Length: 170
Ligand SMILES: N[C@@H](CCC(=O)N[C@@H](CS)C(=O)NCC(=O)O)C(=O)O
Ligand code: FES
Image (tube, rainbow, N blue to C red):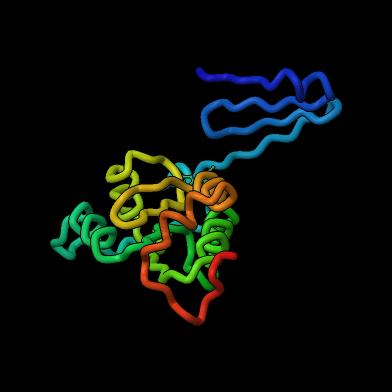
């Protein structure tokens, strides 16, 4: 059983241990315990449980993703939608991308567990958001933020036809 203790936190009187999906926390002698597990979706908070829309359509999810990233120069698979992200990481990625004059295409993976798993398999990346630019997988919110900060994102997006209603990224 995997059990990890963060010794630097222990030294400050705080210890976390992760066993299966149960998180126990000791805070200055007080012990709190809660479970993050939800049935049918082991990684997502219960509020965001998915419903399946792609299943039964006859289209392979890999084909859907392949087509998405081919036809949309900036494609994000996220939790929620750009106007209403359902997670801070997705909100951050959208905020970064919105600094540029580019159209942003998105799919809400919370609506479809088949799509969610298909995207993970396609990119071989375990978390969301997932951002693709010009058909290539870029990464998640950490990567897109650091590419914004170091100028790489501006360079990468520079040849994508802009939306004049958006700011330029300056
Ligand atoms: N450090 C990650 C943060 C994203 C993250 O940890 N996402 C989690 C929580 S929203 C996730 O997608 N977990 C898997 C899942 O929900 O299926 C990034 O740079 O994108
Ligand atoms: S849904 Fe909980 S951290 Fe993203």
